[in-house]
Amino acid sequence: MPLDETRRPFEEDDRGRVLDPNPERKRFLTELFYKFARGRLSISDLARFPKKKLMRLAEIGYFKYKYGRYQEAMKIFETLIAVDNANPYYHTALGGVYQKMGRYVDAVVEYTRAYRLNPKDLCVFVNRGEIYLKHKNFRKAAEDFRNAIVLDSEGKSLWANRARSLVIALKRNLEMRQRMRKPATPPPPRPRGSRTS
Image 1 (cartoon, rainbow, N blue to C red):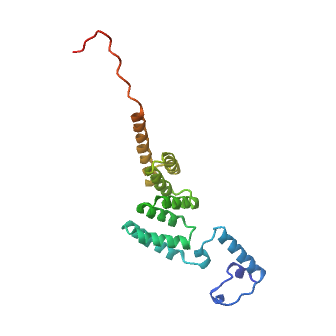
Image 2 (tube, rainbow, N blue to C red):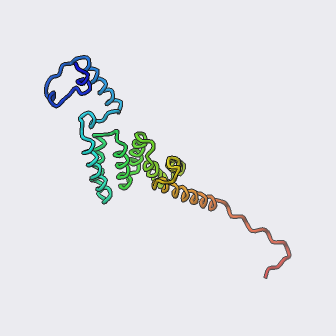
Image 3 (cartoon, rainbow, N blue to C red):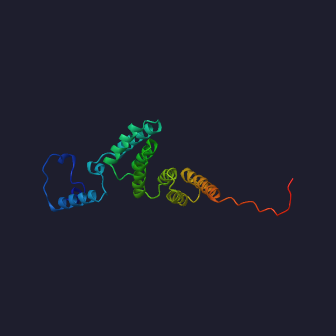
C-alpha cells in the first residue's frame, strides 16, 4: 500500500466499500481509536467536520449568550462540546452561560475543563474566581485571581486587570471584617475623686 494511502485511508471514493484490512490500515485505525479513547481526538476529528462551520456555530451561540438567550446558547455550546470536547473555548463559553443562569457548580466544572485544555486562559481564572468569591470561598478566589495576574505581568489584559481590582476589593473586605471582629477596647478608668462637668 502506498504511503499516501496510510495517511488518508478513507477517501471519498472508499465510503461504503469494504476496504482491505492490511497491516497499515489496521495500525492506522488502532492508533486513531487509541487517540480517541485517550481524548486526543474528538468526534469532529473522526467525522472530519469543518472547523470553520463549528466556529460559526460558536459565534451564533455567543450572540445568543450576549443577548440573554441563555437556554439557546446553552444548547449550542453543549452540542459543540459533544462534537468537539477538545476545544477550550466551548467549555469556557458554556461555563459563562451556566454562570449567568445561576448554575454555579456546572460553571466551575466547565471552567476547570477549559483550564485543563488551556492553562493560560485568563478568562477562566477570573470567572471561576468570581464564583468562588460570590460563595465566600476566599482562598480559592484569591488563587484564581493570582493566577490570572501572574499570567499577565504587563497589565495589558482586561481580564487580568479585572482580577487585580477584585483582589483589591477582596483585601479591603477582609481587612474590614477583621476590624469589625476585634473587640472594642474599654475606655480607661477615671481616677477617683475627679469630677467631670
